[in-house]
Each structure stands twice: as structure tokens, then as C-alpha cells.
Image 1 (tube, rainbow, N blue to C red):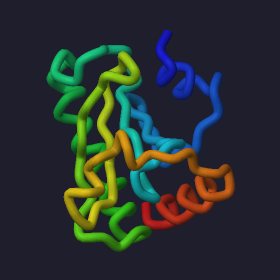
Image 2: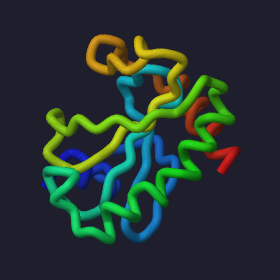
Image 3: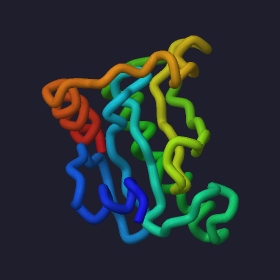
Length: 129
């Protein structure tokens, strides 16, 4: 069972943003920028493009209102979607509020957010959903 499955199942606490029968969105505890959110399918598949077609298409539909809420909560030039997938073997995408290419460097920009920062980000984003 992957780390993300444990988060989805509630075995590991998270700062949930949204959930439906197929997907789960929660804050990255090492955000590149405030509001950095992960969107994961509830099915365990390592590579994004190995997801069944209905999950792959549904992921963007599920992520869209979340990205729009992040944009309102954290005014920025855009909320971009990044896929890397090496750190956890469970398909996922990153929704990151960005003002320039420097914000795309999610590996070196990451620092652990405090529980207070994460709770505040969660409340801000959820308020716009």
C-alpha cells in the first residue's frame, strides 16, 4: 500500500481539500508555494498514463474547480499542473500557484509547512470550493 493510499484511507493525517468516489486532493506538506495541492486517484497505479481512460479524463475534471479555488485563495499568474511521480509510486499531479518559472522548481523550493500554515491554506482553498 502506498503512502497516498494510506492518506486516502485516513491512516495518515492530511489536509484534505476535496474528495469524490475516484479522487482525493490534499495539501503537499512540503509546498513549493502556499496552496500547493496534490490530486491522486483512489486506485493505486504507479504511472499516470497507465490509469484507465475514465480516470485519466476524470482527473482533470476533478482538479479544475480545485485549481480555480487555489487561484482565488492565492492570487497568482496561474495555477499549473505538474506531473513527476518519482517520489511516491502512485499516480498524482501537483497543482501549484505560480507567478513564474522559478515556482516550477518544486524540488529545491520545498520546505516543510507548519501545521498552522497548512490549516490556514486548507481553510482558504476550501472556502472557494
